[in-house]
Image 1 (cartoon, helix red, strand yellow):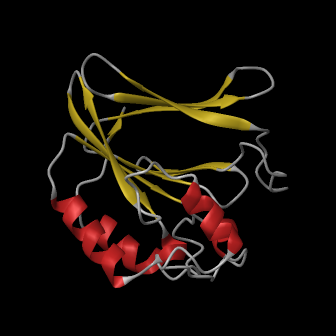
Image 2 (cartoon, rainbow, N blue to C red):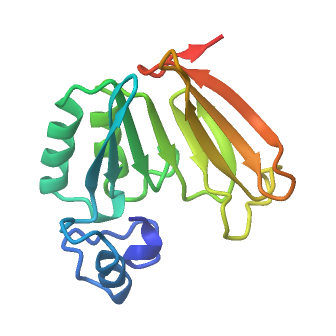
Image 3 (spheres, rainbow, N blue to C red):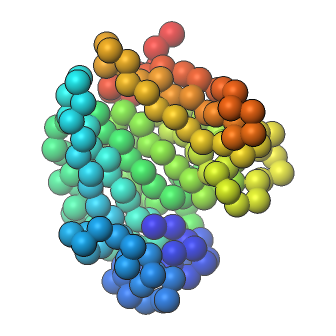
Length: 182
């Protein structure tokens, strides 16, 4: 969940998930067993277990803080965090507290949006927000998507693909613990 699913304003917060028509519509699209705007998906891979943690900085509450703490403490081979706002846009109430938790735990990669661009911040933080909305004028990269492929040795190849041409705009390899493979 991001700002548009809450009130539209980046600094908005909808921790109850019922405050606005947008957040109610968003929650109505969640799987039946998901009752909050944050949740976990587990995936078995040939190289070990992976958890995908969907964090809602615009639905921040003490309950989410406790949930995220517990989820990050659960050891898995891969930890993917998916969050709307990046760290450099900390006006959403949950960005700073979730950053503190995420940065103190093992992490494979954090996938971010909000900014309408592709930007590799570092090996563990990528903004891939160039999927559909009007692009940021400073992005320099057109519409696209991020493809993550697991290799037989357990490393991951992350490739930003240009939607129009299908060509790779950026590509890099990381280990399950988020270290860049040179």
